[in-house]
Image 1 (tube, rainbow, N blue to C red):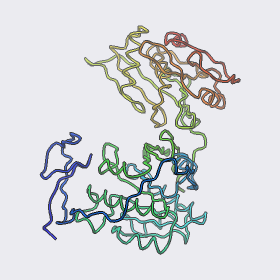
Image 2 (image 1 turned 90 degrees about the horizontal axis):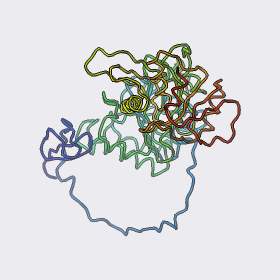
Image 3 (image 1 turned 90 degrees about the vertical axis):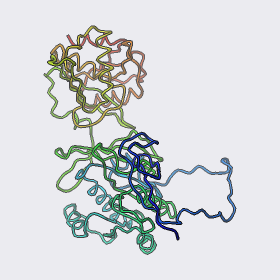
Image 4 (image 1 turned 120 degrees about the vertical axis):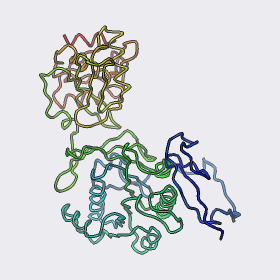
Length: 449
């Protein structure tokens, strides 16, 4: 064995260099190079043994993954319909948001269903986990707690207990003795994730990983960590409020557009059966600057309130602030309103917010955003029984959107009697709501006089 060597690895993209660099040549990020120690002689290659066999694509049968439930319908929805055996799931979120609570509740639900679960914690003692489980009402002899950071002990324990699910809380705190660096470094994260992936794929066991996040909100560590796992879920929400949102940003076994809504209580996380009703709770129907949009997240319609505040600007450059939407969408819609409708917003500050803490990506929310901005600008309330659905084009046209029938049905269930939608949109003759078809954004502004 030779002497240990030092290399520098980028925490963002995994680029390796022989010396420290201020700027990574791979992803051009600054101050992202970390020192790693590589044992001497470890990277010497070996000749492969045996024969590599290729299988024709047509000879492989297509089989649907045999999923099983986590006991939480909202988590099952985000996972694509349930837990897939042999999958590796990464759950990220801010400190204190409830990641450990969610994973422990999942373990409790699985144990009640007769499954064995190993819960390995590198952060909390067994007594701390027991205190949380007592608060959640979980007490099962099918949940096996392990307080250990060395991952090399896990394979033997798995072979002995044969669990259906393994939970590691968190991936940044565990390490393997085969790599001579501290937990949380790029090399350790990559090696530990690879070992857990091998453990999951070998016998079809599902592995859940809790992940820390940086101050920017991304999962700590190299991006290669998210590439290696099968599913990446972010646990979002404000710790000062009770509602939490599960959002899938990667899923090899389902949609990446699904969200799940949970409520944090003294007895743990509870499912929210009707998210639209929650997001519209407390809405003041008499104030200007408020409009309801029917967005679509994954396979579910979601009615949310868009709030806008337009005030004269006291600065040389008017402010544009957004919460719950992409900043560029506000700039685009403001430009369309100024150019196509003659709404003078160039000397006004515009603040926009999606009530309830949800982040809306659906382009069909454009029409409601425009209506809320004009309502605040004119100080005229939008009719409270009206919802808006439609994408706004740069020439001021209203473009059609998909799954209109499901959106309108959700609006009917919540008591709305009118919907402003793009012209020539298929809706299969849904009754119970007055539908107004519009071609341009000028026609929409007639509702706000």
